Length: 339
Image 1 (tube, rainbow, N blue to C red):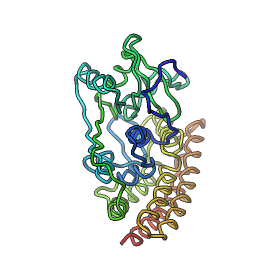
Image 2 (image 1 turned 45 degrees about the horizontal axis):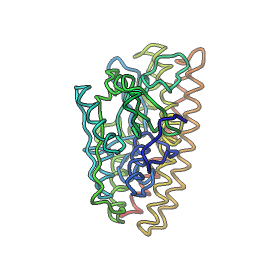
Image 3 (image 1 turned 90 degrees about the vertical axis):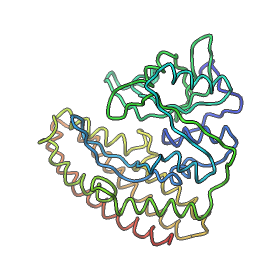
């Protein structure tokens, strides 16, 4: 534990996903008791994406975001005004954070985890700029900020934090991002808003705008993974497979099972909020789907470490097709249960 202490009233919580976990920290500090799973589901944050940017390894992930953002939508459904900010100016970003900290308010900021000194990547250089943390304490004399992560509190120097916030590494440069909250209108989510959140996520999974998203995206992944050797290097194949493991397994901040475990718990809460008992059955279905994703994640890690990862890629087809079938059925049933 750092001698630098968090603000009075700030509690370090064990959380699952960096964004919803950071939101949970801010909500709790402001006396608003909303679970991390509920924030994820209300914000319509669960989905699927298969994406490959030019010059980058392919990416598989279980998070999506509505417009304007998952954070803002979750805020609307709990009466909290949430705004995201970015700037090209490091001094402006630093001052915005310090203004909050000097007022005794925690600050939710976006960073490249590769520049945070408390992460250990085994000597390898790794960058992910979509990481979100909460600055919850400040020592101006030492020039240190206390950071709340999913597991603990860590002191970070202002120069290291500035480097992490201003990283330009793709595909998710943090752009010095920070988020502001206004809790004046806070209220628990209504049954109607909770149903709407479920309906919208089911619609996005079943009828996505492009075939790289939703259930169609899972099928696209099954179709394209065997062709990776025609598109990227062996090293990129290893990176893509290990990334798939990271962003499906709990170690990467999904709560495990490609966010399906968190979504399952959300549906359990939604059953109580809406009075729709059948949502508990859907919760059990998504728990089983999460188990299937975990098996796939373990395979991806094993394949990434094999002597010939390209030769293993055809093994991804059958489990991904099976998961797609499971997801199709589960989302269709869920959609019917909230009508």
